[in-house]
Image 1: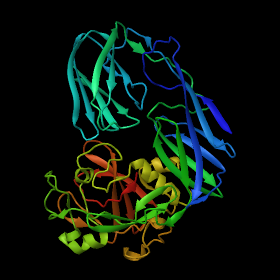
Image 2: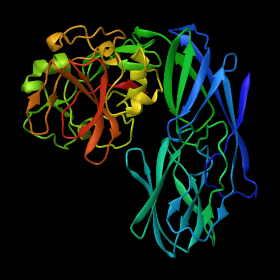
Image 3: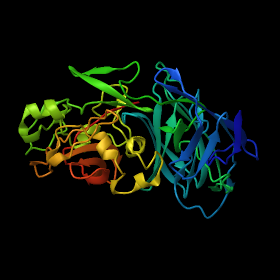
Image 4: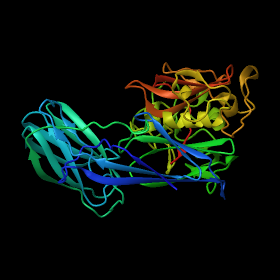
Length: 442
């Protein structure tokens, strides 16, 4: 059975039709417990970018999003540089990109890949109005298209459905319109709307259990919820990385490394990590044995390998990444006995949850009787931290784990487990602090 919803896609495109282009996305859901089929009772789909949600009830497990990509109308009051999302996205062979330039002047176009390498660069003298380009990607699956004009810049993310390793990227100018654009406004349907590229949270329910996963919606997809927990990740019980064997742990639809990451060369705590291409870490009190037990402590930029994109691989193994703030929220909701996945309690700052912390902490090693029960096998250890002034503190009292989500240029989000409370604390701190790192399977 299909649930069919008409939804306005907030995308800017120029098409031949005056009425827009009709399209659909189909989301199919199923579930397993380890490798055995698991019947879902319902599926809740939440838009974490715009807000709103919709629910499917068994036997309805297919959500069809039926939408039109609107033709933009023109508004002479538009006065800011803007690059509109390309269409189609993801790209199969080529895609059209449109931009609005507020006044006649030179505009620089830069296309970079996910590593930051400039793939194409060109300068154009453009009149005021909308200008369209045709872009054909080469190798790679992700590109960033940036326009710079009079000190302003505007960017979009372009996905390629199938990477062509032998392809060469190209950019072709298609033409201009003399006036500016404004998207038609349409009412949301059933409190749920989305734009291509929004982050959606899917929560599957069955037998009084719940399992959640996040994805950035671009194409039709089939999703399989995992309802097994506290077992090695099916098919990947261990990961060998940089000469060390890590165990894995399945916590519903998330597969985590069971141990804190311990890669790189140890440097003294009173030195800042240098950007020299070599992974560097701190060991508590400059003792290598502490790294063996608790893993390394890393400054945020070193962990990210100077990337700023949420969910970057950073110093994690191939096919693993630094978990985002949103992915930590899914974990917290999965292991707490009261506040489930998607509960807005997890958006709060400070300590949240009833017993998520107890359920994530090891049953040993915490000071003053602050041990947990490690109910789901996360095995959070109290490894302490390295202060940005260069000293170490709170081993036995706290465990601290970075996310890949920035608060601003100086702070980033992290998670804090303490010996003296039962929840999990969500806070930001200076990127120069040294915290532990866990990796999450892509």
